Each structure stands twice: as structure tokens, then as C-alpha cells.
Length: 410
Image (tube, rainbow, N blue to C red; front, side, top):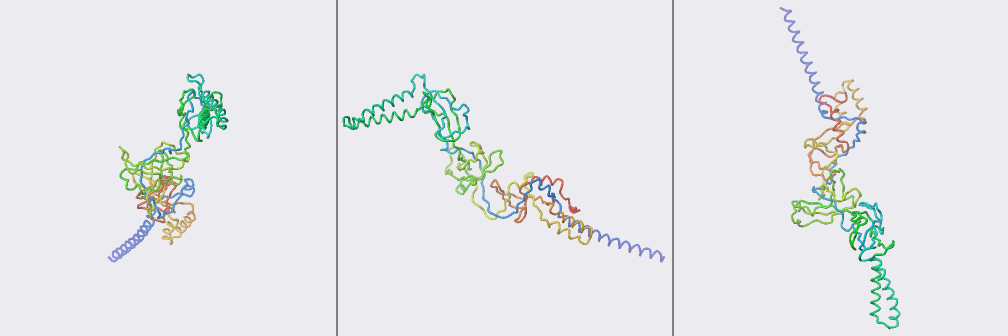
């Protein structure tokens, strides 16, 4: 009986010791799980991966942000930049350069075409003008000495001089560089916008032959919705993007300015036109339709990020926040009593410069000026966000996300 009693005492002692040991182990395990839980969802990229992807970051700061209003617009040529080269007489036109076409460059004073009226029913206007000029010149030379001697009246002399000047201007207007042909020259340098005739066509005096444009300045005509009329006087500038083109053009960088805006609605329209003018940089095509961001008043203390920092998934927007290098180091020190953990920690610390740790974070966006987007919530000043290579980080997340309960230092 005594032996049975001793046996039960020993069994109870063992069970109690086992429970205490289990609690200790379980508590340690829970602590470890609590330490590593903060790493769930983190994305790790090596230095080589970041360099290859061209990853760039920007520190989030509060700053001025210009309120914007989106609208549609169109690029048009500025009035006054075009000049029509017209026929100086009636006849058959021959282009000087057979390769002359729309887009060709012409210089000021360059001969564009010749016009001839030979063998036409009305006769050669050049020959007629030459004959009239010669006759007027001879008459003036005859009457001038008579007027000096008061043999003819001053009135007769003035009439002869007027006839001479008229004949001279007419003849010079159809003056030829080739026998029997009138030369048509460009009055200004620029590019051929429209070629309106071809060699061999008949033209009347004054008919347009080519239209030359300098194309130095262009206009942006924006259709502002009627409901935004109250904001018209707040418009300061604009950014725009051509359809199918990711490039954002800033009028502030193109010597642009607001020329005018309508105070009344055009008949049959629900939009108020606002017109901007800017320098043509060569790759903006007149006639193209654009997406416009009208820049209004500035707001202060606004957090914004470049549009390239945002990724979109099913209507939700995300950014990738770069974690500080000491983020993981602080958690690792919780297990400093284990020598083997010390070794892992030292190894991880040695490779900190070779890793980038990123967090995918949802943000709420506000307005955009076409270049940057307002962040309403999800970011705070001082954080570092990926601005170039966000989609590369997104792709890397598929294979490098650290699951919950696992530390990337292992």
C-alpha cells in the first residue's frame, strides 16, 4: 500500500513539471510569433534587384498643392502665324521645286512658283505692264522740262508722275526672273501648311498658292463645363496630355499664358472656351485633342506623391513604402539571450545595405494636377515612398513577401 502511495506522488510530480515546461515553451513560442508578426506582408528586394529595376524613392513631405479641374481641349495654331502666298497675276502656275509639299521648309523671299500667261487669249500681262511702264516713263521725261519752264501746268506734271508710279508698281508686281514669267515668293520663312495648287493649274490674280506657317506659338483651347463657371477667374495655368501619350506638358515650362476665357456660353454649347498660348516645342501636333488639368488656387500642407508612385488594383490605390533599415534590427534584439540568434542577427546586419524592405499600403487619393496626386489618407510626412519602379516592386512581391511567423533573417 505504501508503494502505491509513493507511485502516485511521483506521477503527480512529473505531470506538474510537464505542465510548467509546456507553459514556458508555449509562452516563448507566442513571444516569437508576436515578434515576427510585424513582418507579415513585407517585400524584400536585394540591392541588385533594386538597381536593375531602377527603384527610386521620395521622402513624403507636406507642401503646396495646386487645386485642379479636369477638362477636354484641343491644340490649334495661333492666328497671325500663317501667311498665304497668292498669285501676282493670272496665268499658268509652275512650282519651282517639284518636291515642295506640306511640311516643307521655306525661307523668306524664296521663290515658290512662276506664273506665265503666254498664248492666253487676254495676252501676256507682263508684256502689257512693261509697255505701260515704258510709256509712262517716256511721258514723264518729256513733260518734266516743260513744267520747269512753266510751259505746262503743275497739274499736268503731277498727273504724268502719278501715271508713271502706277505703271512702275504694276510692272514690279509681275516682274519676272525668267522671260515671260512672274515670280511668286514667300513673304516670310516657315513651313508649308497647305499646298493649294499643282504645276500646270490656271490661277487668277490673288488666288492662294501656298499657306506658310511659322508654327512658333500654338494655342490650347479648353472646353470648361458650365458648372465650373465660378472657378474661371481662379485659373492660373494648365497641364495637358495628348490622347495616347503619357507625356505631361506644363504650360509653365512652355512660356505659356492664359489669353482669354469666355464670359458667356456659345450658342448651342454647354462649355465655356478658355484659350492658352504657348511655345511650340516641335512634338505637339496642331489639331490633336488633349486631356487638360486646369490649375487653380494653391492649397498648403498637402501630402502628394508623383503619379508614378501609385498602383491600382480593382479601383483601390496602393503605394510601396520603404521601411527604415533599423526596423528589423530592433525586433531581432528581443532574442539576444540565444547565441545562435546573435549569429543570425549579425549576419542580417551585415547585409542591410544589400536589401530593400517595402510595405504595400492602401491610400485614399484626392485631386491630381496630372503630375502629382493628393494623398488624403494612408501616408504621413517623413515616410519614404517608391516613385520609380513601383510596378517592379509589385511584381517582386509575388515571390518575396515574408509570410506571418517567419523572419527574413533566417
